[in-house]
Image (cartoon, rainbow over all chains, first blue to last red; front, side, top):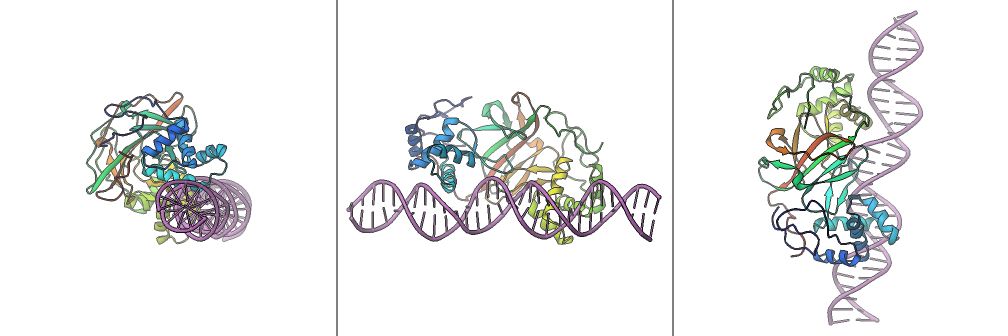
Length: 169
Length: 169
DNA sequence: ACTACCATTAGACAAAGTCCAGATCCTGCA
DNA sequence: TGCAGGATCTGGACTTTGTCTAATGGTAGT
């Protein structure tokens, strides 16, 4: 990744990284400012959607977001949620997590980090970028540029079914 | 990753790794043997499905497999393809690749390796496990066991759109 | 107030995958 | 050979996630 100045007052990533997110915008004003900083006009719906993600600092799926938003702004439509999430992605306000065979999760933390994914419970846990050293990027396929690295460590609850069935011995 | 013994006679991973897959079963007899080795009764449909994957040694989606199978056995149904792929997964004959927001890819190579994924073209390329060193597994979330690590390097064709839009400067 | 333009909305639509109940295919055995 | 029983396969209905579209609503600038 290259330049990374900017930003309201969220996370300083000028040089090092942080183990944990801290000054997160929780008030709607903070959220609105953050939207503006990313060139996004802060409408009601957008603020609610961003607020849902940033307040919980959690990985949410589109329908969880829809539910959260409807709790306060009962008229939000599915289409708006999808449109808005797509916009946020383009503007790099959030990040997309492809980990579940069925739905996408949205991650309000755009700084480099990785994830544990519990394949049974569906739970996602952050792995700080520096907890894991990745050495030696192999050369990329010719004619391509890297966009990002995702490391996903799939876990399962200790003692939860299905470890045995493998090839016959 | 830790232990990783096992496996009939496909790929020796006892100590080192191989850069490239070699003794791949291409004839239907080979495929049938491989199915039996994993405790799977080799029916026509199952042989065709496994054959499609092993012959091409490629990452295929369910509908690509369905198409490939139908080319020879025109009566194969969607349900059978899905059932069979699920069975193959359980028996660890193949591996699931969650990389595309919309569909699952199935990988006939179950030895440890990673992937490039071109987010524009959808192309998947293997990264041999030893081309990439991952140091220091962080401790797992309490009460969980690791099932596997997936490293996905997302790429985009050199010069293909959309790198600019980021946060306002 | 008028006009553009952008954002939002409901609902129709598309695609991947699941589920189920009936039909088929084996296989062992009399 | 004939048959019963279990495993496998099949079409089609169904579910879920996400997309698209046409119409409506809001707002800034004149």
